[in-house]
Image 1 (spheres, helix red, strand yellow):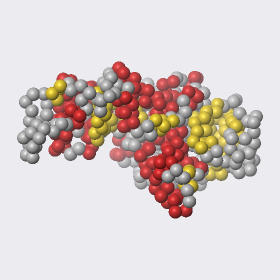
Image 2 (cartoon, one colour):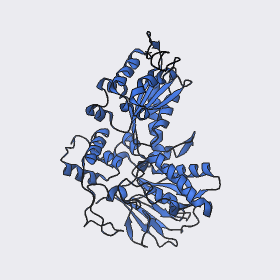
Image 3 (tube, rainbow, N blue to C red):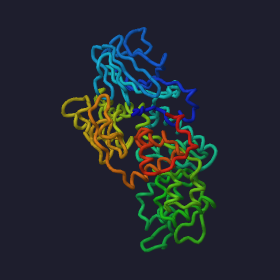
Image 4 (cartoon, rainbow, N blue to C red):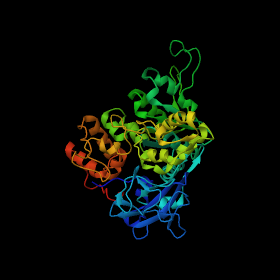
Length: 470
């Protein structure tokens, strides 16, 4: 079974071109203990890591050997061979045997440095990883933000789709700053947290006496966003009647507060977000079809954190520095974070880093992997062990008789259920039937997803080419 890689830029790879144009290589995400985003291209299908001046994969790391290891791409599979280094090479968290080719899924550790395989290193040759206003962004996120800025310059609506915790509000802020009225307010509203009984009043405002206890005029979120941008997170959570009134506001540019006899003129941009595919929500009856046609395009997809590994070392470093300047991250902590699925994405990662720092503080200022909770970054209902949880414990995963080169027999996976069917259908719809992209969104490999599709009796769109973003 082919192992998945974690290309740092899945979305930008699709936009940049075909397989022929890609430049495979590895990305140094941690160099001698410091966050990095340096691309190393392959020569004749391989790159040698080492401290020697003549090494094409030179790493200024005092804990690695002059000729440390070779990372090689054969077909679609990545391999690592330790060259008899003094401190050893660790592949996906386990020490590799000297002079033995070992398949790598996600990350290679050499000394205090970490590298990840990458299907296309060109985005890293143009931009690295940086933090703007506390928002860490690598090439993948830069591409998403560029799309959002382009949408703001051409119109007044944008829809953002992405898993919980991926940074959708940061994308909304970029849309707002690039818009025609960046000086106005950005009003962010979590629609899932608004009780249905008061949603209309909170969104559109109310006049004095409109209801019992209304002793003064009250502006709604729409009025507060006048001259700026209204960001509605989980827009499909709004009641259908409220959605109809929202559509009226967007079409007429007028809002009628509760109890008012005359509408008020408003000028605003609307940015909406959901964690699910909008078309699926329309089909399910939770989003009005006419509202979809008003807010569904243009749209951007924010990839999950597991497809943006280049950001993880920087996120950890910034969070530790914010907590206490003396705190530092040991290479083992970052390695473990690169190996985990993080279903809660950036939000979950930062929360677990804070918890690990709290556990480490009584004993010193270095946060290591042992301070990370066993369940941190694991999918719910799965085993808490390291990096294979998203694959080995997903329905339709490997059978008992399948073995990893570095592991014993794997457990039989749970039975399929309606929840997994919905997740797979949503992922395929969200990625236009592209199996590889949908598999990444689910934390699976494409062959694993194809097996699931077959078991569920689902039909794949044969016209969707899923080979171009492997």
